[in-house]
Length: 400
Image (cartoon, rainbow, N blue to C red; front, side):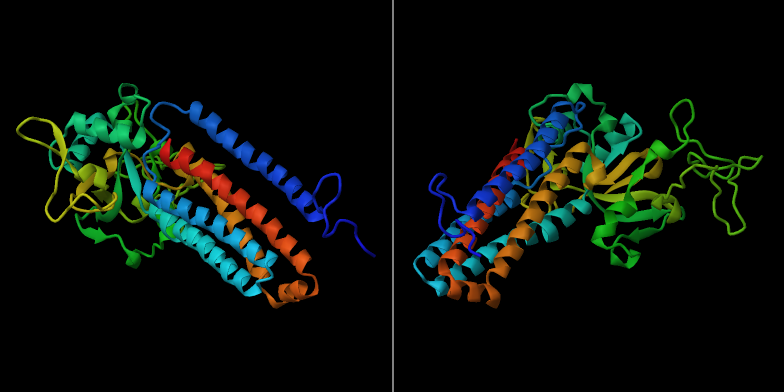
């Protein structure tokens, strides 16, 4: 049985079957990505003041990945041109180069960019006084509202001018957790010996005081033993924690037990190395203006990961501690959704291109070169769509 227009285009549309099919498929993809892009826009427009963090993306990493995908769009066209010229060796060369570019994109995204966010934290505080102390330490020892405002507006609130509408304690101090201090004032380094892989690191350290029981004045309530009380925990008559025969805390029926790394590891304080945007800003003593200045052994070119100042933040001063994981904020939830969906399309494109390099595809080419060339053209159209999606993702996530 011969399927009409399997290789030759129809007279009325000028498209062969496969090309018509890919355009229909891409139309459905436009609706898919159009939906998530629209959700992003609506969530951003409706976000509360100071909650849409837009200064946290590394623009140079995003630009590098953009250039890689643009180059891959050119190389896959060259692969198709080689087939039209009956140059199978040239096709294989350019197809492999396209695969290398696509793989580089995923390596940067999944082995560098995402893991870096899972180990980067920000802290919000229980009071303005606690925030001033920690931010002052991050700036070199003295709190400077002008410096903090510049950092806030540059990283967390560019262009929206909501400084006066967000309390200081709710403005985050960001950096890397390098150690913790226990109740005996012993310092413990945070590294692989603690059993944290970078994938579990973020979730092991998440801390949110919304699960804590508070007094009317907002302070955290403790029992007679000095333990912090969590919602749903049962108490004995003397307000001590009720425990079962195995020594585990007993929760009220229906309550969800809350795992708290701070309690489990007897953490009384964390040691934070502030991100580069904090420790490269120094107050100029003579005029009170700000400048970017070299610190001891620091050039200010670390991209936000240099570690020089140490800030010790007590447990009772922490309102919320979270890495840049999906649960951090609406921005990061949508960021991982958009970039994750796009990365899956990149992975799918790589698998298709690898299939076209297998011996079975070589046999298709030898039996019917035009049919195989059409397949590469269809794959190229899909790849151009994937690249086009990233052209939109890069500015809205990294620049705007």
